[in-house]
Image (cartoon, rainbow, N blue to C red; front, side, top):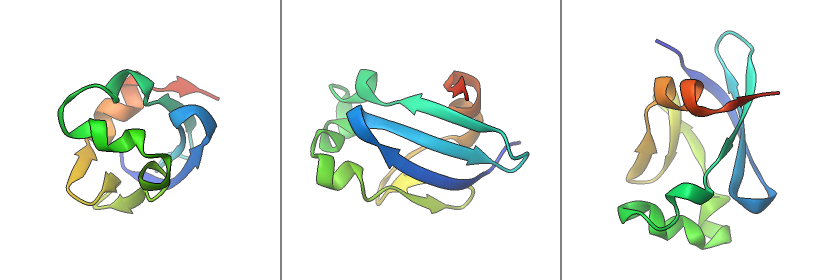
Length: 76
């Protein structure tokens, strides 16, 4: 099971993720912005508040499984 050790919000609703194996990946969050709780992320100020929480990323009550992010993100 992978854990995220660093996250940086980027322009255009992308995230730079660093995993516990030191692999860096880019996750494009745009496809999520029209779905359920993720609609809140359209507010770029809110999007930029992303934090590490229990080995994954979160925006308060919104989170995504680190393993899912690892599999669906693009290698740098």
